[in-house]
Length: 149
Image 1: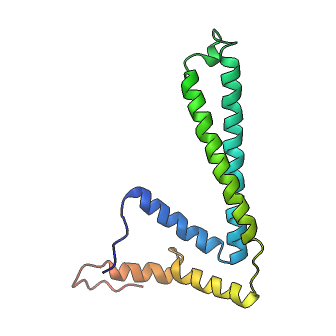
Image 2 (image 1 turned 180 degrees about the horizontal axis):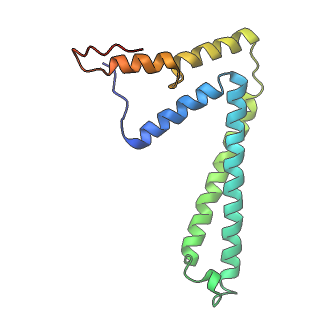
Image 3 (image 1 turned 90 degrees about the vertical axis):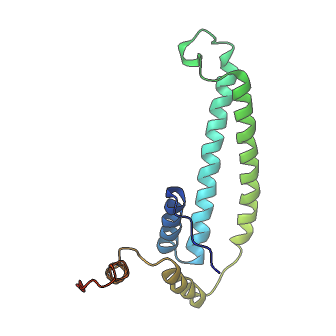
């Protein structure tokens, strides 16, 4: 018995994004590059936020009366956030090291073609006219005589 996919809005958004990434990057090489860029952007953003929070923490005591630093976060909250972001960055470095091994793997053009074929099967274009017509037929009420193409 197969389990029905979750229909909540978060899961539906995930499924759409998942399928879009498969459609737009249907080869092994494109998936490798996409994941590498994603990890790098995540690491860059976390690093910059961590640096900013560290500066705020260092300057908070010096600028206690300055409007910019009043009521942002307590020192404890800033320290906790910095620690969590440093943990995330450490995990991202580990993932990056694993990704470097994935880039060592190359496949032939025939296998890349197979990737594209399978991508089209598991994430078909939802705006493809044949798919729209098929979906419309599937969602007609029983006994409906509307058979427009």
